[in-house]
Every structure is written in C-alpha cells, then in structure tokens.
Length: 174
Image (cartoon, rainbow, N blue to C red; front, side, top):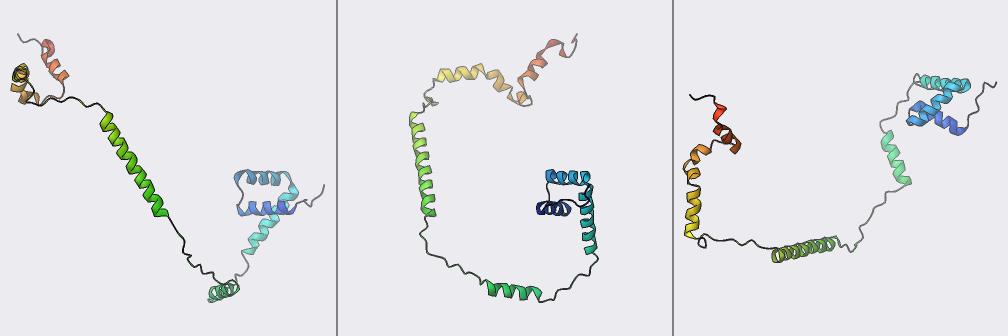
C-alpha cells in the first residue's frame, strides 16, 4: 500500500478550497468523505493545515505609508485612464414616453365614451313627477317609524327589536 497519495492538481485545488471554506455543501462532503476513507490523503491535508497554522507565527512585514499611492501611480502610468467623451446621440426616450401617454389617453377616452353611450341609464323620477298622493301614502305608511325615530337610533339591528317583542323574554308579567 502506497503512503504517498496520488493527487492531481485539481485534487490539490479542491483540498485547498475545502480548507479555505470555499466549497459548497455537496463538494465539501465529497472531500470529507475522501479524507476519511484515504489515510494518505488525510495525512497530506493535516500537513497542509499545520503548515498554514505555522504561517500565522511568521512576522508580518510592515508596508510603508506611501505604498498605496506609489502603486496607484505606477498602475496609472502603465494603463492611462480612458476618458469617455459623450458623443452626441439622437435619443428618443421622451418621444417614446409621449407616444405611450397619448395611446393611454386615447384608449381611456374611447373607453369612457363607449361606456357612456352604450350603458343603459336608469330612469330617474324627480320629486315633481311623483304624485302628491303617492308621496303622502309613503309618509302615512311609515308614520310610526318616523314618530319613533329617536327610539330606533339606539338599536343596532332589527333582530334585537324582534327579541324584545317576544313575550317570555322578561318572564311572567302577572
């Protein structure tokens, strides 16, 4: 049995991504499965993990305060900034919006006109067209309600009045 694992460059890239936490759940489980099944791969992964932990103990080099500005100056010399000039272009967004607005207004006015012309209108009778006897008849019919309006204002529903009308609601009156 060979102790040296046979890992390709893609395998090393996947293991490195696994140690960095860059893999999704499915690929991460696949790498973990391979590490648990192959002792040689497990040893290589542990060695790589220890190496990365040792890097934390190395002294960190300090950068100069002008490092950023010097780097940006060198980059700008190598690749000069491209200044885009605005070319006069014939744009028509306002005309497009105006056409849509006009189309909506035309469609709305056609719809309103069509409904007002084609919809049946109810025949309303004015007060002068009603017979005086008919008006008096309705008032006489509803006279009891009109006279007791102040009493009915405190009632929420007609069912409440019907329950009050029941004889045995309050018990025996004798």
